[in-house]
Length: 147
Image (tube, rainbow, N blue to C red; front, side):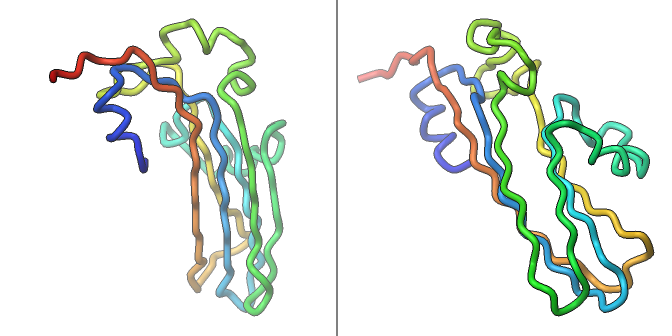
């Protein structure tokens, strides 16, 4: 992420406080509508993600969903935000070291943005997706900088 390497040159440790995501989806299909879903997860979504997981996403309390029409309809946009304290449900994120890490690794307790699309049929054409993520990161434990 932009600025991380620069701050990592001064500080040894960090924690992610919050994150915002902006997803834009365009449909190039003239026959199949699409559903866009964005949800924060406190588990790695690449571990055994399946179609059943995608279908269950709208049932999650923090999931945002938007429908996208056929070719020619305007793109759909989802803006979402989440804090680490909210997703984990505990203010311990500020003093539990499992939520922080050295700048060279990742914390033991972290969370992810899951972006998924669902269509009721096979999409023969492409979809166009743009994802922008912004993080609020707290750096601390200033390292010794030689003169």
